[in-house]
Image (cartoon, rainbow, N blue to C red):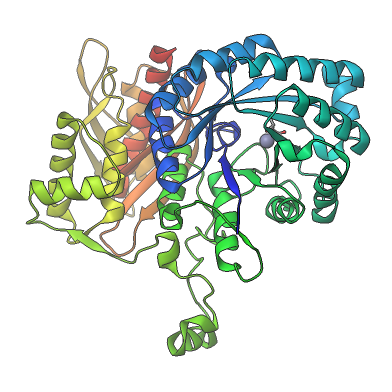
Length: 508
Ligand code: KIV
Ligand code: ZN
């Protein structure tokens, strides 16, 4: 069976989703989770785009060792130099250099003739090849490029040293048969094509990203690029979890396999959704909340008689566990430490202590502590930015009655001179009363632009999780908070957003 390599670009193309703004600690945790998921290559960022991106590519390259780490570069020397510097300590670095090849991009965006584009591409691949064994070259907007021109430039960049040729459907315009035909054309018309891997990269503007990826594979692509949950620019990228599970389930049809560890899918999807604030729709294939729910009586009856009547994927395959009780009130530090290792986390002694306290406090309030609860605690602790002074909640109260206007009182520790401040305000609802009060205490000018409430797990005692989008002194950030109580989660999410903005300003 041919192996299809999985190139994950959640941290680069995915991070370009509107409103998504991951900090360095979150990117690192996500990179470690992608390593557990078994992707072959992860594109950690675009080092030349900002100091923050550079730093996080560097940190990821130094931390994950079982996966190739790639950095994106435009076809200019300074971008390639930034990748070289950021990836210098990576175990298996890859340069990903791109230039547009469609007539519209060459004429209006690059203002270059086709021959100039060929020269630049060749020159930059040669330049990159001096520092990288693995050079991926992408023809941006390949799907709207002239096939003969594409064949010509591909032949030349392979001669210049490119080891992977990626043909993106940058604007999500192409149809599966057309996209597949482009790959077949290159296989048949580029004389040295066997010296490089062919790769596909599909956007979902017309809802074709996954179908196009399969069409590419059917016609010779051996690498598939995409993101977890399909996040990305505009309508997003091909969903890698959908690709991996579809190949696994239809192995009777496709003679291909991937190295993905499918049981890590749900957890990876949850982490991406939590960090980005992009909630997964309930009906999303593989990772949606309803993906394994059977509503109609006929279906339920069938599933009870034989699960395969209506269930082609088992929840267990992708790591969806229903209420797996792992540890309880009486579990000791030893069992807890073992469990953390099993989940793939390495914590410093201080963070381990902190995690144990958070776990014990959860067992006081929640009867059954599941893997997913622990995972939430651990990711919160690993991405905690408390080394930068910030707002912390001391106490809050809300007076609420169905015929009274809600009134909130909040006490916060503030970063300014470590002052503790208390204030009160009202609102149309309890959350508004709390947020109006927070605005009175917080020094930064803060506007709420979005609010979402979900539960982590099922049952009455499930944790509440709130995601907010804010602008804090003009910086767009997202914030999240989880707590047993919905109002506390709402307050924590707001403070988290404000603290993230403060952290971002300090980190620049
Ligand atoms: O969609 C695209 O063309 C890209 C390239 C930079 C690979 O993301
Ligand atoms: Zn893209």
